[in-house]
Image (cartoon, helix red, strand yellow):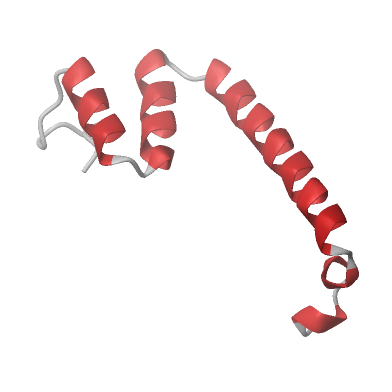
Length: 75
């Protein structure tokens, strides 16, 4: 189905932005709920890995004293 034929493509831009904000909030809430079920290092690795921020990844590696040889190491 072409994008122009989709319901969300027909929504007013302001309303669409509000929907995007609601989806973002729901996804981040689900993400943090999932992290609660993980071990500390696994939860931190998921969080840092999804940040796409080099300083966060480097900080994670330093916090857990990880080297590139470690499975948990974030590139």
